[in-house]
Image (cartoon, rainbow, N blue to C red):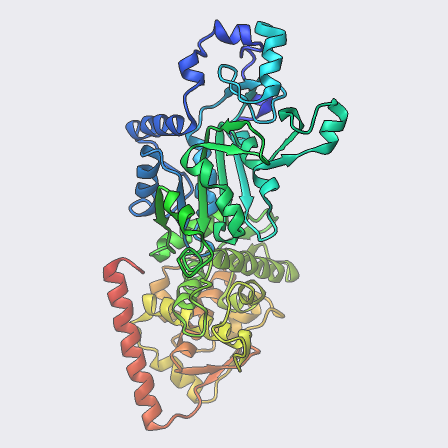
Length: 508
């Protein structure tokens, strides 16, 4: 994105230079909505990506936004948290011109050919063609406000500024004593209001004029400012209803309502997490297995379906991003502790990421008896189970189960090196023969082998074929009644069928 330090050096610096340049009246006075529309058309013709970095909306949300921009609509994005609403709104700047001129010193970025403020009109009258010109970049033309109940009309629209009046000697009735709010200061740009229903009713009413007639009136002044601004909003769907906190006439003035959604597939979710999670800068090599990435994403999918998690709050895509960062950090810590050069995350690392999960889900009932930690552990185990079925749905693990049933136990701890853990795991008959579905390299290192083996054992635990305690010690499954075994067998079959159905629909 362009900035002040990268502006071309040959741009006109005065009004006279502007008038004799390629910056014609028609080009400079084009409205923001026309500018967005024309630049979008050019991108569509060139088959450029619209909103780069936004994943999973190519066939749903983005076409609707394209239609809204082509229609010159003010629009609102309705969706739960973590559905890329802010990213999309900020991405609208990619549809703005690289630079646009304005009257230098103007608080509302006056168009040099059609100035609105008294300041700019007086300046042009005094200096004529010598009036200084400054330039705006796309980032400078985007103004964002998070709506809160304490936002005032003065914050958004403006108010009398007694200090400015005292310094200038002007009467309070003079336009030169105005303090412009965020909306006038967004003139010739994009103004975004996040969580619009959280604005007080009278603030929403104050937006009526700009939404319908395109002007604002500040504190009863006789002057009306014909602003040129594209207004966008975001909101939670539950609040954006007649029973919510939105004023109906404002709702009526918004051209398009566009619904966002959570990602449909694990593949899309993995792509977003890889894009958003920080890159580890370390002396270590970081190798994240595919099944770890899938399990981390499955946590969010499972949480969104869990009846104990509040659906109205939603489960943000920030959850797997935070989890992945914590998982890699724990693997890095373990490797550094044992002097290893490669850090390979394990399923056990996911359980250490609870602090990155509990704060991002809200339980349906605040008085949940078992607590958030227990709910999260259940969700992780279910996520492991789904991922496990993607690799080992047809695997026969009876030989491994038999080893545990004969009294075998194994503990996987961060306190021991990967080499020591591997020696312990090699005692389990048939274990490493079953890892073929993971497509490990022939010369996979100790860290990768331990990680893969632990994934298999954790999946067997999820299916209740073996047991595991909180210290990550695996042992024989607890004795079950015939009825319990039948129930678990039925659950396994349903899980397997569910996995196959999701795979056919492309949701694996």
